[in-house]
Length: 448
Image (cartoon, rainbow, N blue to C red):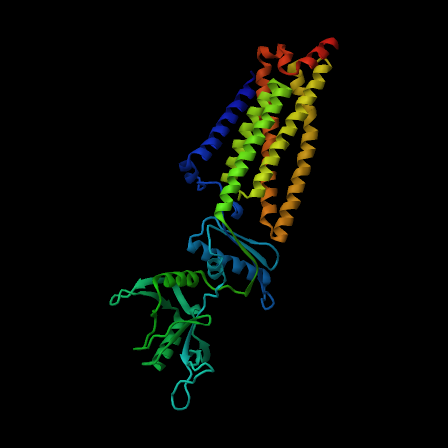
């Protein structure tokens, strides 16, 4: 056995052991920040949303979309959604997938709210009585103040630092504590001075959160009251994440049941195991000892691919599993080409050791060209899936690309190394271990 082959075999063993460990021991995956393989919505369940941004009034549409993505990412991360997918599909289209979110209305509310608090005061008539609207309710108008002789509306855009939920010391009820920046403090001071013993309305969109009565002049700090603890926490998430800079319109929405996803996983695992076992059985029956080596290489290949899915990470969907199973066929195809070329070299009178080397070298151009064609197809599929906002197509393309890339390594490096190791043993003198008996007789008649 040559030194180079020994080193390659050692590298294969170390790589396989590491890949198997990353799959079997969650603690290792946790150290690598990848405890489990990331599952898509069709396997894990969750919410799928596609938004279209109204960029008609945006001065810089590209920057506006970056701002939308940044705000949504902050909101979702603060909410604690595991492994979300937020991706711009076109110039004005955004895909959001939230695994584990069972209520799609909850997801829409989390993503789509403007998160801009507006402070309002009651409109009064000449007699200082509230002006009523058509429904007989007080009419609320924006609370205004002056900064540098300019009228400005008081909103949460003047909040400074992080907004937090606190418990009132006297009532133990939840409140949202905030602090104003310099302009906000000036506006709030003017407004609270004007509204002593009068209500100050606090609105999120058109919904009134609370309307506390102003007791004293307030400058730098304030609190929002009148909410439940969950409501206060939800509002702080929105406020700390910021405001979505452009309007978003939902053009597609659906949720996926996690129960259905569990069935998909079970069926896919069964299908994959049966397919892999049948492929290995065929290779052993038809190609004898090389088939055994190819079967071992395929098992190593499967471990390496699954570890790659976990560590990259790849979001595994049902279509992605199909891509993985298809890549197994591609890996077998490479072995078939190599073994058939080996048979041809044996028929010409070469020794088995020489046939192994020449067979690999002559099969390589066909393997290379077919796999490059597959890579190009995967690239086109991924681009089309991204453009049309179809994650299943993207998942299929990505898993197939990853699987085919590793299958090339499996066939050209792992299988070749195993056969080279056999070439240094006595099995090279037993052709029956490499070709069926009928073909061995044929080779003998041809004068091998």
